[in-house]
Image (cartoon, rainbow over all chains, first blue to last red):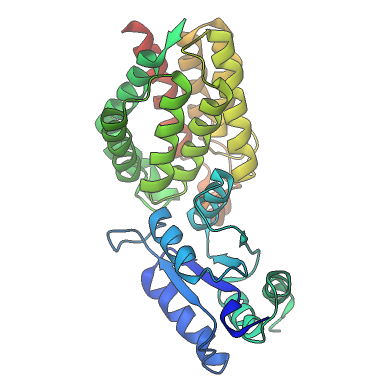
Length: 136
Length: 199
């Protein structure tokens, strides 16, 4: 896969700060991974805690390079809003997918994997595998 | 028969009751949720009313699909995609008919409720909006007043339940003894049908 066709990654959190910080951390731990398009979509339009469909759609459009977009979410309305947007059909780019993964660990795994030029299936699998990392 | 005007009146009646009850919804959402249900729904239904005015959809299905889209886009909490899916699925099930019968509407609303159950993964007894919506759909054959009563009873019946979905589920047994805010707002939505029928 060519350099410009990395899988895009969208990080949806109830908090703008959490989404931005997780994006920064994931890119940092992936060695900067400058070529992986990662966009945070945190909080509501007004900067409050919650989920904004508009921010999610804008973030997904901004990271779409034609190789698919992996969307990772934190809780509740973040999950439900992405599912509802996907059901809508034309709101998110073709190849956008809600990835079932822990938010932080999944984001790191997804960015690291996407940086290798892996396809969307591989990025999704790596993010989902993060559920298996036991800490104790 | 129910025409686009009936469905506009339904949305207007719901927007008015959400406006009136916003504080109560938020109060119900304080002990077991994140205390934003009233303000979130208020923002959502205000957007629904604004969109209905500018876009003026002319079929029942189009009114509900547009309303659902607005709720998904503007609410900001889980009730947005859930109510949005309810209305959009119901609207899609109604198709492009200019008028629909009550039976056809009841079947479409049942589709909508199924969509909500699928999206949120909740079933009756989980202390969610389903506990008001499902009995309401089942009672709709007996008229809008019967549906309203069933929804109100369903909402009250969530008080002794333990939440198994959403933010309240983290509280475990401490969620017992509180009426579910989502079931309460669902009862307002269903009550809006009766108000719309009265004109």
